[in-house]
Length: 84
Image 1 (tube, rainbow, N blue to C red):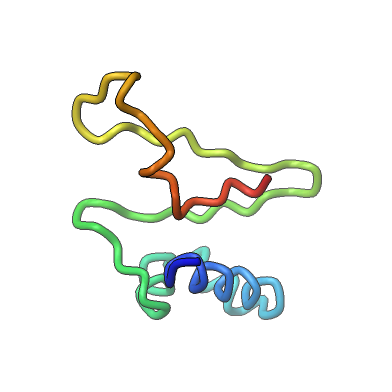
Image 2: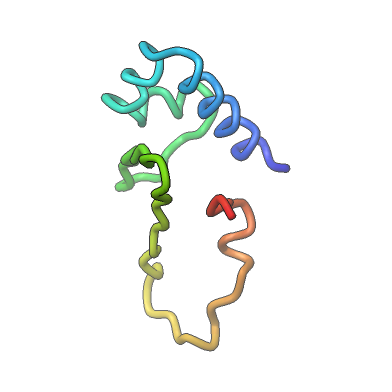
């Protein structure tokens, strides 16, 4: 796995164990992600969503620029894990 995926696993684990950390993550995700070496791209802000029991959130990403449907593959999503 990549470093970002490993960092996100650690952030997730810590948020389950430490309520104060979870609140910090929810209040200022950019700062917490940066602490773990996940730097945001210019012009992009992160939002953390907490799933409820029995509910999972899937995010439909916007394509960057003009993209034909035939051009979309799995490569841009290779580091993503939708949780299933």
